[in-house]
Each structure stands twice: as C-alpha cells, then as structure tokens.
Amino acid sequence: MKKHLSVFMLISRSTIYKVIALFVAMAALEGALFYISLDKALTRPIAENSVGLQGLQGLQNLQAQQPVGLESLFTKSLIPWVFAVAFLLLTVLLCLTGCEFGSKQGYTLGRLSISGRSIFMWQALYNTICFFLLWAVQLAVALALCKLYIAKIPTEAVSGQTVLLAFYRNSFLHSLLPLDETSRYICNVFLIIGLGTSSAGFPFKQRRGKFGVNVALLVSTCLVFFTRSMGGFGNDILMILIAITVAAESIYRACKGETYSEAQY
Image 1 (tube, helix red, strand yellow):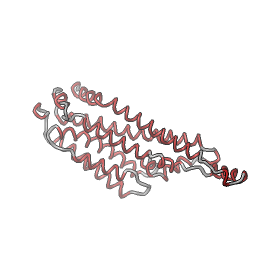
Image 2: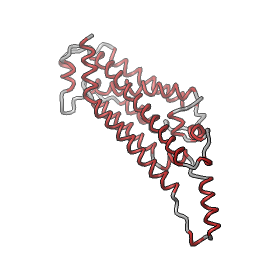
Image 3: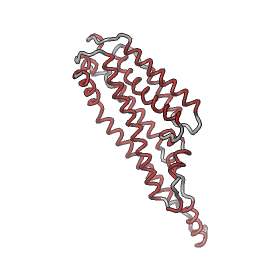
Image 4: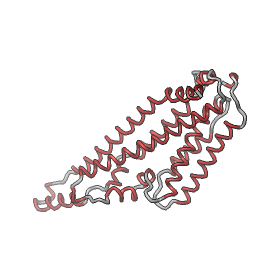
C-alpha cells in the first residue's frame, strides 16, 4: 500500500502547485473582467447636452430601475470563455503528467514496481479530483460575483430571486448549478469521472506508443455542449453516454492485462 500511496503523491506533487496557480489565475481574471463590466454598466455616460435637467434625472432613475441583468453580465464579461481556457489548460496539464515527451516520467513511475493499471487508477483518481475542484472553484467564483453584483446594484433593482433567476436564465450558470434539473447534475458527475479517467489514459497509452484520442473526443463534447439552457434532456443523455463510453474504454485498456514491466516505460 505504501508504494501505491507513493504513486499518488508523486503524481499530485508534479502538478498540484500548477493546478492551484491555474485556479487562482482563473478566479482573478474572472473577477477583474466582471468588475470592469459591472462598473461600466453602472457608469454609462449620459449626454447632458441632449436632455434637460428633468430629462437627465428621469434617465438616471430609469438606469437605477433597469440596471444590466446579472445573467447578461456573465456573458458580457466573457467568463464562460475564461472557464473554457482554464478547462483546456487543466486537461493538457493532467494529460502530460506521466508522458515521455522529453523527460522520462514513466520510468520514474515504473521504478516504484507496481502495475501500469494501478498507476492509471491512482492518476485517474487524482485527475477526477482536479476536474471536480475546477467545477467547485468556478461555482464558488460565480456565487461570489453574484454577491458583488447584489452589493453594487441599487437595492430597489434587486430582489431575493435575482441570483436564482440568473441561474435559470443564463446557460453557463445553469450548467454549473442546474438547480432542480436532475439530469444535468448526473451529466456533470459523469463528465468529471470521464474526464478524469480519459486524461489518465492518455499518458498510459503514450508510454506504450499509442495516442489517447478518447480524451480529445470528450473535451470537444464538453466545449460544444456543456453550456446549455434548461430542458436539454436529450443532450444530457448523449453526454452521459459519451462520458461512460470514454471512461469504460480507458479503464478497459488499463485493466485488460497490461502489467508493469520496465520495458513498457
């Protein structure tokens, strides 16, 4: 068991600080973009020379009553795009861990004298945790930005339902936290597991001279279909099936009898 834990620690130590730095950078950039977009929305210039004092006051009151919507701010501030880039960078980082592009990481793993499928399983567990943390950090950032919006917008323009409605109306927010859409929760769980296993399968196959195309398939599916509005039950089922297929293929390749031998690394 000590050797197995050593593998997990070796895999985690090789990327954990980079993963944390990626999360911090994502949160900081999203916060800055959202704050800039919100500040611009609240300080829209009004041409005083085109209206009288009474008209100016009326426009200001209208602006206070009808501020830019919370859901539209997330779109205007490009937060879904920042998340997509962070998702891609995390995937690449995890896929390269254990590969033999330049450095012989596979040889280092092989010296621990445990089977290749055991290394795959520990890496799949670690990668799955990382993808779960990416989702959790993004959701936490989104909720924090919602609180910032509530604090900055005039109180008469918001209600107790403002954030709830934003998570229903905005496709990106709804995909992060589907509220009462159970199929989307199940879909997200399978996506995280599928991404964790397929990204672990990439270096497993690369060390054996193969290419892990299944992770590219699942990543492409996520980029195209992750941000979806309510009611996409058919798409949820499709993504669940793709994630299950990709995860099953990765696990099958690792468990079909490819045990450790130093020559494989």
